[in-house]
Length: 266
Image (cartoon, rainbow, N blue to C red):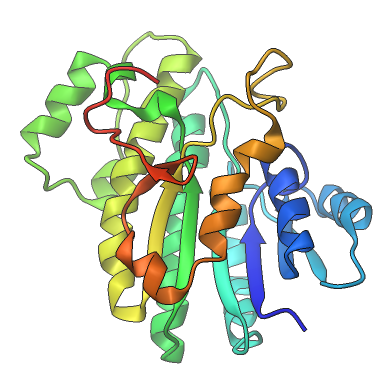
């Protein structure tokens, strides 16, 4: 019987699919979500392993109604019915879009809301020991942000809140890459804030820069395979409670801490 359960958003393709394959080989049970139940079922069928179970569920992280439906209809049961398993939430699904509101909803608001709901379920049940991992990017590093963004965050003097990150405005005319960069910079800040919220329940919170991977978003010329991009997330999902808490709030790349606040490049 598996002792680990991992929830993967956007698990039907790309990094999420590669992560699912890796974790199945390590005997994790999975909750695999996709924008449609049919896509989730197709992915689950192609991944199906006799040694661990896969439950496909619908979750469109670009749609706040879908996110809230998942939080109310599925998350409480997932937590309560798996008291014998160590549960990890992986906020994998992401998007690169021209419209900031869509990018923000998918890359910032959904991970924030899902993570907080995950923590809340632990609080309600009195449960201790869990993990949250959100996919970030090297494009979220300091050197990939506009001077306006860096000044606004500096003016907060380290006191930015989760609600402020969720409501962050971007009024620039920059292309979608810059908006993606901003969303991942905010994810890195979000990771630190959620780490504090998770500590009372021994939930460690991390982000991962997977590198430039050969996925639909990364393209065929990317330098890293999807399998290698999933490695750090799989590694984090297997850490003990104590090991996770030692590194809570940290952004990782290739299993090492990433100094994203000071790096001048991706």
